[in-house]
Length: 421
Ligand SMILES: NC(=O)c1ccc[n+]([C@@H]2O[C@H](COP(=O)([O-])OP(=O)(O)OC[C@H]3O[C@@H](n4cnc5c(N)ncnc54)[C@H](O)[C@@H]3O)[C@@H](O)[C@H]2O)c1
Picture 1 (cartoon, rainbow, N blue to C red):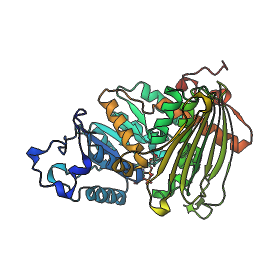
Picture 2 (spheres, rainbow, N blue to C red):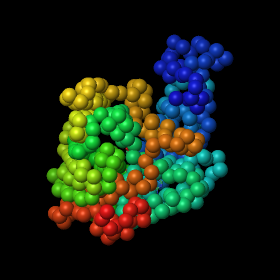
Picture 3 (cartoon, rainbow, N blue to C red):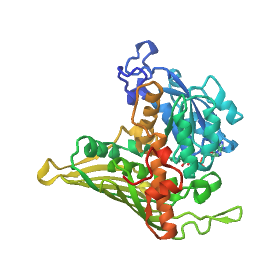
């Protein structure tokens, strides 16, 4: 996609060595429209670098500047970003991003149009408040905070913000979920949705700077940190308010040997979660972190059929993810099974292409074109289910969400009454 949305562009040929003889003046399909927005990336770790790569590929916004509290993260991000320029013709090279010396300086440089906060979860609320003083559009990585009270405060701040805050719940842009949401909610192919089943089998959480994701207080807990993606999706499919949550979760020893500052890692690495929605829909979620490769599966059953979306990423064979959607409609319509995928340059840019479309949604919003990106309210609903599940696994009891919302003072932020209706 270029800035000029009406003009075609052939990325595979524009960068091909055998096409570099085409002079600038003759480029039409290969012509690159200069970016019209300037982004700053705050936190240039794993996902910050992915956002830099994706912004570069999408081409609608330049990465004008970066900020990170660790020099090593800055050096690596700049080196990896520079490597993307290798072999590109002059007209397609991206200027080296400015390295800002402080959070204040990056947020308040008038040259920057929008801020992307990609720092660890426990820093989100503090960084966000500095960023909001700038009045600029803000992208805030998921989960929006580590505690429900900070998440609710974020919703309140975002409501009175003159610009907007988008939450990085990007799984809704994975090919299999885009298609599943369309089939289930727009085409209503499976009828009225009754059951949703979702699972992630994966290797242990990856290493991070300071290993913040191995500690409940810094990450918000496993179900908040990573699984908010899945609870956001389940909430979208259910189309109703979660009413009751039960979970069983624990540690199977994956991080037993991991310590920081004398503290032992305390996060769960496996869980079963059951959610009852107030429209009668039931959902479950399974997480397992002891698997060699990544597999996600979604099964949605309605009054007219069953939908199965699956993604398998076999990293040991260095293959791209295999993604598919299967619809079983019996006598209600045409059943089918299709392989899905985005263009390979897009898939390779990160999270199997979802990050690219998440960026496009952010820029659409910035340009006043609307969009379906995650709002702070949706971010809070995903955290609510995750936090209730963590509470349930601690006490062994199911959590009634009306009481949980009241006890945590979340009714206003969620826009609900705490009296059961
Ligand atoms: N949307 C997704 O699918 C997705 C994927 C991965 C991570 N994330 C989220 O992105 C965030 C970062 O995760 P990551 O995997 O990149 O972690 P990371 O540890 O790889 O990188 C975090 C970076 O932030 C820097 N940092 C820490 N505190 C900072 C501060 N106060 N100011 C500036 N820089 C600071 C660190 O030095 C590091 O370079 C987390 O919130 C995580 O949950 C989202």
